Amino acid sequence: MSVRVYDLAHARAGDKGNTSNISVICYDAKHWDFLERELTPERVAEAFKHVAKGPVRRYPLRNLKAFNFVIENALGGGVTISLAQDIHGKSLSNVMLAIALPDPEAQK
Amino acid sequence: MKSRDRLRIGAGAGTSDDRMVPALELAERGDIDYLVFECLAERTVSRENLARSKDAELGYSPSLHARLRMVLPTCIAKGIRIVSNMGAANPLGGARAARKEAADLGLGDVPVAVVLGDDVSSIVRHRPELKLIENGEPLESILPKMISANAYLGADVVGEALNTGAPIVLSGRVADPSLFLAPMLHEFGWSYDDLPKIAQGTAAGHLLECTASVTGGCFGWPSKKEVPDLARNGYPFADVKADGSIVIGKTPDTGGRLDVMTCTEQLIYEIHDPTAYITPDCALDITGIVLTQDSADRVRVEGARAQSRTETYKVNVGYADGYIGEGEVSYGGIDAVARAKWAAEIVKERLKLQGFVYDDFRVDLIGMSSLHDQVEIRPEPYEVRLRLAGRTRDRKAAHAIGFEVRAMHMHGPGGAGGACEPRVRDVLAVKSVLLPRNLVNSQVLVEGTL
Image (cartoon, rainbow over all chains, first blue to last red; front, top):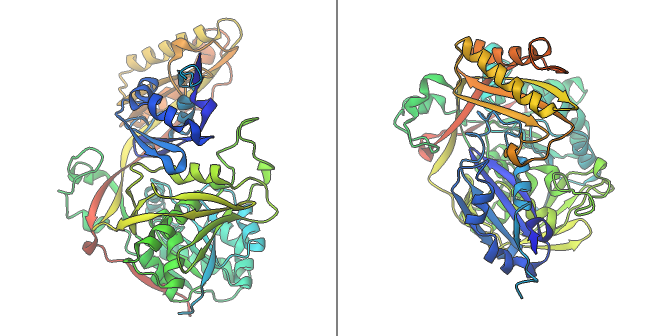
């Protein structure tokens, strides 16, 4: 059994130059520890390897039930020169939400 | 300076293309003291510099006319002061345009305070050794192609402009949160040493700077994150007290939602290290912030911290970097994807046969891989739109992409339909440098009679 990030959290992507930042915000604070354990920068980098070279950094924001993922080399060279349709990478939050993780219930 | 213990600052625009009516609703029904229009994206100032080079009176945000025409009668009647970076590459020209709009509306002689000094192109031109933040190379590498160089000014100089008493303040490049912090400095006399207050004000500015992003825009999701009456979503405001307490609210009787979830998404938006979100006013630390629902559509913001502002300004350097050309055509029905892929190969070969070269080139199958790549694992859709795009120094090479894609109607696989006209656009690239504060001479001028 697995659970998607989508099931536990919401997310939004922002852009600065060639870097995307994606928030992951728990609906319920009780899932924060699970996401801290399972939604590692390595796992996120693997999920984004087709759209971003990385590296990926993760900043914990327990006060906001959240994490901030900063993904470098993610926006086709940057908003101003990118050939992508979605130059800002606004849709990249959906790559994050689709990441599958081991089911938290099954682990108990 | 008049002193009050609270004020309400509204967000009237969060980008140059932002919707307009919610700003009027906020002015009419939001009981606000200030209305802030944030209208500059990274490359907007470069684009406006080009407009100014063709006509010396242009170079301010083209949306200035429509926005001011809409809100000025209400704002002047109610004493709501307007703060905006719509001056873009020509704040003085913007001020003259604003005064003309006011006069045409029968509002008489409306003075405009203008913030100058963000344009540092003549300063950085003499400092080719400055290092580009993005790649560590010297500024010299892009100086020959430079179109603009603008420092992100802070709330201090915008506050000085407000001190003149002018009903409208127009600037060029000012950091987004600083536009909102400025009225707080002006009204409450906050000092830059009072970091908890500067932090709270900057956090409030960051929450407001994308308008509807905190009131349910860019948020909703069917059956998962419902947003009531999204079609009529309202713009937000901040209730700020002199002690630094902040509550975010939105225009009464509008759609959308404003709660801890919407505020959390916006709070983290475009932040990298959450302990040091650097603005010209401070390095904001959001790791202690607590958001709580105060009442319906009202969220309290507490616990923002900050370190002192840095000794440098961030400067965006805009430069011309060739052209992007693109073309699109659609395929539907049996083997739609196979025909689209074949067409892409034919177009690429024809471009190569003509000797065109590209610094970057991209093939998208819209409906499968244009957003998140990985075409090999996506299910085949009934119809697909092929898109080819390339960046090049050669305008002809850029145009040829759309030309050859359009030619798929007659010279490609069967059943191509709906090709677009060839598209070519100038690339205005942006890189940045840090410039010591003492090299930047920000100042305030007033157009009109106070």
